[in-house]
Structures are given as structure tokens and as C-alpha cells.
Length: 301
Image (cartoon, rainbow, N blue to C red; front, side):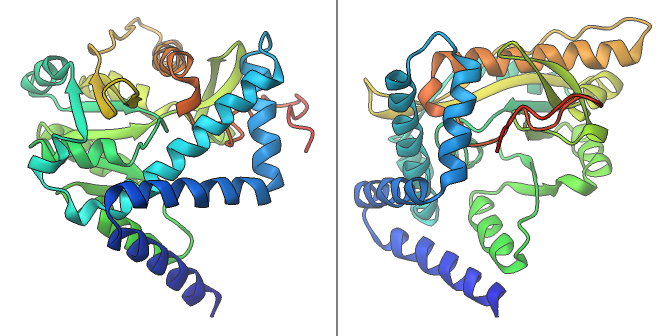
């Protein structure tokens, strides 16, 4: 019964916002996100704790302003997500501006596939959706939602423009196949990773357990690793999807050391983007939750 109720709530919410014009859907999405944040104490605690870790030089007033911006971005994403069935190539061009496409195109032309390095920035679900409508669909790694019906509903919207999901827990063989065919795989590499799945690298001056899979695949199959991030351009009142030049990989005779070094390079790219747009990253996630063996937890709650 609970599973059906969760599905019904998700379906009703998405369909309701989808019936509205885009501005109204974005506005109501922001209202819902603000309400959810206010009633979820763990989210508030994590956001402020993370910002104090990342920006110890800031005062709390500045951190609160950043949190308000983050909530607005998440709410806007909910509104955008509900509109996906309405979006066409013509309409997406009025919503998302592509910048640095030559970097992605050069990587794609190498013929060894592209690993699209990204994070939970701004309306991150919109980035691959827009990329597909621009003519370059991709496969993307997803962590399955526990409720199977909700998972299927969300993925049906994600794939509306031609993208395909790869379940994270069964990803290695699928990723290798896509890359061998010269395709693109999008990887969100900015969240905490279980001890057995990651390596510790510096993130805002604190060791953070970070997925090592991206570096392992990059070293063994030689695709281009192209950073790409969506951000809200306040001046143009549009989203900007920016592709950066491919990350140069470290290659020595010590593969494990190279995995750590390249994971650190990928993480620095993500951190630099967060520093440029701090109010557009998802600060409610416990990024430093996993600790090295024997080290005490950082989060006191």
C-alpha cells in the first residue's frame, strides 16, 4: 500500500506541475522545495554544516543566502522536469544555451567514447535532457529509487528525449559497451561513496570518499573525460550548459596511484564549479559522511 501511495503522490505532483505553464510550474516547484526544506530538520542541519565546512570564512547570513538560492534551484528543477514532455529542440534552445560545445565535439570525434563528468548543479536533470534534444543523446548512471513504480515514472521522463539509463549497481559492462561504440556516458561524481567503492581525495580541504570507477574506466579504455555543468545565467535568464576541455589524465606505472590522482583531478573540477556557483549545488547531501577506517564521523547528527 505504501508503495502505491508514494507512486500516486509522485505521479500526481509531476502531472499537476506539467499541466501548468513553465513559469507557474517553476514558481510552485520552488514553493514546494522551500516547504520541504523547512519541515525536514536533517536537511537544514546538513546544509549549514556543509557550508561551514566548505566556507569557514563566511558568516551564517551569507550561508543562509546560498541555501535559499539552492532551494530555489531545486524547486525550479522540479518545474522543468514536469515540462519535459512539452520540450522540443526549438523550445529547448530558448531555455538552455550551450557553451564550449567544441570541447565535447572534439572528444566525441576521437572515437573512443566520452565520459561526461558532472554533478548535482542547478537543474541537473535538465542537462542531459537538453543535450539529447540538441542531437547528442547519452547514457547516464542512476541509483535506482527504492519504489520501483516511482523509479519507472522518473526514468520515463528522463528518457523522453532519447537518453538511456544505466543502473549504477550493474554498470561496468554496460558502460564499456557504450564507450566501445563511441557513445557518451554521464556520471554524477560529486556525492559521498561507500568505503569499498571509492578513494579519499581532497574536497574543500577535507578528505571525501569519492567514486573511483570513473578513473578506473578512463585509464583502462581511454575515453575522453569531459566536464560539463548546467548553471543558471541570471543575466540572460537562461540555463547555460558548459562543456570544458577534456581532463588530462595522469598515467604512470602505478595504476592505483593514478586512480587516486585522477579522481582528485575530477573532484577539483567539480569543486571549482561549485565555488563559482555556490548557491546552485545540493548542500543538503552529507558529502563527507564516509570516513577513513578508524576516524570518527564528522557529522554530529
